[in-house]
Length: 391
Image (cartoon, rainbow, N blue to C red; front, top):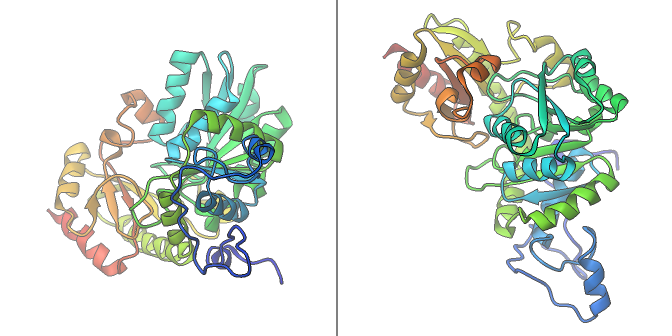
């Protein structure tokens, strides 16, 4: 059989073997541990990620099914699931960095990631230099002997800037750095960073992978088996492991990822295009628009441009607050990637830990509103947005 496309692979997910037959859907192995007949086999199982199942903090059949599924979608050599997206990010960072190290990270980052990088700098002397997500030469200028890691987001939060993954990851490899890419906003349907040279891919599986706003989870995928083994051992000690029921919910949602992403993207295109022409809107930030700084790069890297975008309202913070109080169909709530449309004010929510200067560096205005577009009928969404802008 020829290589299957992501939309087909998410329907036919791998499962651990069962004698003589197998269930159509992956069962939930709701157990904290597993029984052995041979002490030597048990001892071996505790020392490697691909051995027999031994304890829930290491992995579990349901959790491994999710790990194998996403690793396969991303083209990785291995993956581990965690209890949240920040659990995956923190596990990778703490496993790969030590006091005195240096990190190069793109300027526009998810607020939680920016906050933990600030924490690493303040508490553990891990210095951080911020560069443009699309400037490999800036990485070369920033590198030091103690630089260990380059951190990127395929599509950034909330200004949806697209990283030059081929150029940035190639530069990281040339300089001996580990490249880590947060692929949450794109999902493996729109981008597979390992194909562009990334060493580690992280996801908040809470978002598009699960897709139904009913689970919190994270996952890290590795290009190289040796690096995967190293970070997996650290992850078992850290204890940020995923719960089997959360993994099962994510597997259930994953099977419709291809269909959902198609609708997220088409709905977003309609809304972003119309908002760009609305007199109450100062600017729209979506890489599918020619006015966006990532437009040309996104067209080369992505088959479509994602389901999240931001827009700046004329009237600043007051206009933003008025809009969020006036929408009826779009829900004022955190997160993204579910079937329902969500809206939020980044300056006071996802990026609330950033100073005014840091917000400006991220391109976030007091009147910036983020919209995570769901799969509702697009005209219903537009009617809701239009009436909110008229209030």
